[in-house]
Length: 434
Image (tube, rainbow, N blue to C red; front, side, top):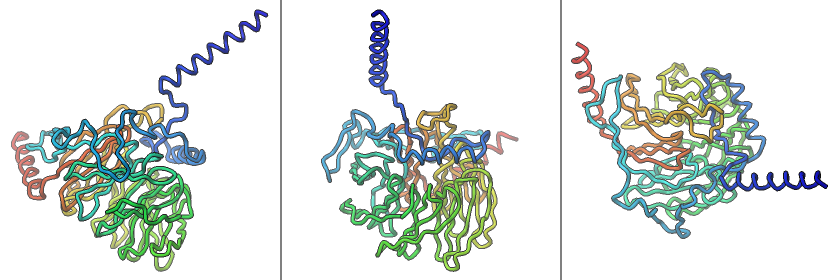
């Protein structure tokens, strides 16, 4: 009899503890981001194994699936503003940064808009010929894209079927947006004016991420992380051609003749000849290549595992290390007439290895002079800055803080102003050095 009482008491205590645990908001299966930790002291193969284990569990519980509990929700098809962010009440950031350990003479980057309540913001892209930029919300079942208009300070949410969005790109005119969805291996074509999905494309692979349009915009290329391939989709018909490529492909760049692929596994950059079907490995760093951009002559590729950006000369396919960055560089973009390379850096991961927990340092956004590789400005960002995009027309930049659930919009100076301030900074540095 006493034994039964004892067992019943233990059961009651266990149930009470379990209820308290869930009431405290404990997540038994937190979301793991799709990118790695800093690989300085870890072998790349260990990180890839960890990523594949994550993929094989299909889609784990989304820690930040629905964002904050107090998030306001607008009517379907209606723009709205959160109560705490009216037209003239956006947070202002002072960005006085150090250049080569000396204070810059003027604030080059003016960051003053912060958009909150965006669960797991992943990709960002400015819509051409518009005052909008679109932010994807990763693994979010309520909506997959947040559209923000920086002129009106209003936003709209676009719901995607079966999950959230991971990356977003536009055609040249900004008439259509394309959003990839990892969970389903699909890409959605969205009318940029009506914000309605007009077509869904199957990539015929798994864990689809980065997209790129061919120069003639007849084809959509999409990298498939788990499929170790790139899907070439005919936009008009939806026909799919699978291009086998390197392990865990992520960033891609397309020309008339070539497809360049950033291989996350072992830090590979690979070139595929689209006419002959041949391919060649341009470099293997043992790191984790992530994102690609090009100024026409060179291709720039971020390596999260090596804390660097590499540069490929497209005429010869020669590769060199261009600049060293902060911890975990991920998304990159070119700005100010291709004179500045912008790099978002997530910062060091939490020591436990769980990417869904803020790490020991803030992330950063770095600005490098393309002609020299010189660091000309830096911004201290938030928890894991990930998405990044620049609008040449409006001289605006936006980046997302993945774990903070927000995005920050910044105004960049003209090329002349940037050069003038850099010249003053150099003169001041030389003067005090003497």
